[in-house]
Length: 322
Image 1 (tube, rainbow, N blue to C red):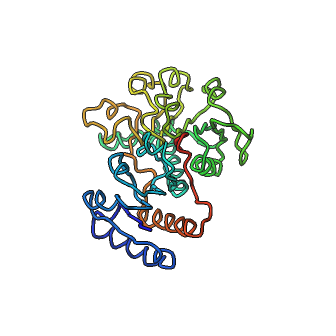
Image 2 (cartoon, helix red, strand yellow; image 1 turned 90 degrees about the vertical axis):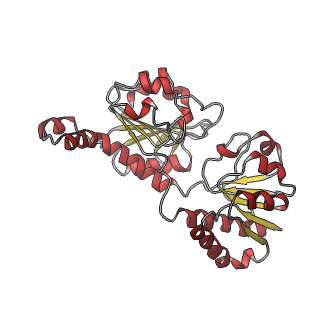
Image 3 (spheres, rainbow, N blue to C red; image 1 turned 180 degrees about the horizontal axis):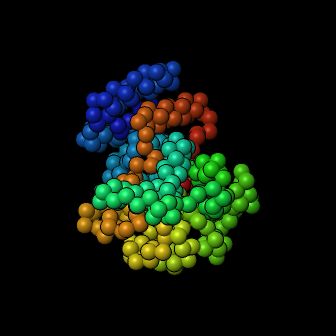
């Protein structure tokens, strides 16, 4: 069987993956392993590949593949590579779900501390060479005993709740299918219920997957229902948010922490950059220094399971999109 790895576009990455493939030689020796260096190589090699590992596999490349049985994406979200031909196929999809959780959770906490400790105002004062201790002190508040609503309570949502609960924040979770009223001491509800009590929460954190149902779910009414002085954080998908609502209906919020935006990269002329109460972190919440090694190790462990005919980890429901 042939395994095609769609990484290695620079020498460092190529060598890192080659080293890991060698480390797992007890499994990889059973496969013809090809680590592609560019799109042209990938286009040639995908034709007779049985397994593909990489960040993305576009529709045109997928349609060239004649023998593909399994795709492992190196990201947690797979919406970037779901198209009807793949969804309807018998190809199994797995993801890197789980490896991003700790980093994203810390990122969310950083957003909350950034606004609650008035770092945005302090940075502005520093740029202007202004010292106003009393003004800053009066604008700060404790995150302890606040209430957080986590939209999307999967692996990452649970990790966010763990970090926030360790700071004595009361957490509530939203799931599409509520089979348990409580998970790990977090009350679980459907979106409809959460919308009715949105003004009760100090922090609203979006970690939903991108589906037809969640696209543009954060709209004018959603923002207007949020509590005055609350904080909105999006580490899910930028497409969840209606841009006009973000621009025109969020002035009552203490802060908006965006790790994702409607378009990426965000156009330099976008008005989103200039919102007074916003902090944008350019889709970096899930990244860390040894990301490639971590996601490759996860894939190679899954490859061992594949070779032993065991159930794969992190299988994606293609119809649901996650």
